[in-house]
Length: 124
Image (cartoon, rainbow, N blue to C red; front, side, top):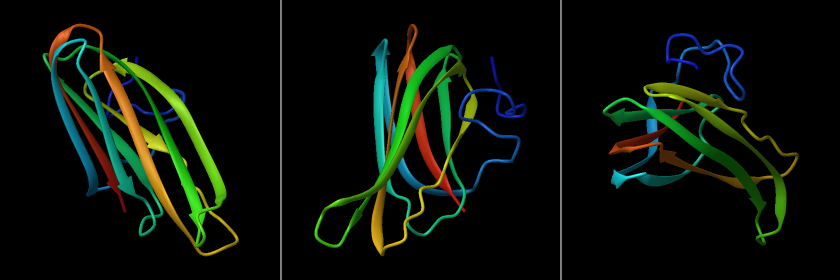
C-alpha cells in the first residue's frame, strides 16, 4: 500500500511531491463508487492523480494519456493501473511528441466498499 507521503516503489508512482494545479475533477458516491476525470495535459510537465475517499479505503484504477496531431491522428499514448488505500497520489508519465499535438488524460477509479470517491488531475 502507498500513501500520499510515500510514493516510490508503487507501480506508476514516483518519489516526487504531487503537482498543484487542478485540470480535471470527478466525484462519485455509493456502493463501489466509480468516478472518471478527464483533462488536457498540454500545459504541464509533471502530472499526478489525487485520490481521496470517505471513509478511507482500498481503491483500484487506471489512467491513460492520448496525444493527437492536428487532423485527429494518434501521435503518442501511455497508461497504467494503480491500487492502494486512500488518500493516495499517483504519478502519471507525461507523454511527449515530436509533433504539435493535443494531449488528454483520462483517469478512472473504483472504491472497494461504499463511500464517496474524489479524483483530481493535477499538473505543474
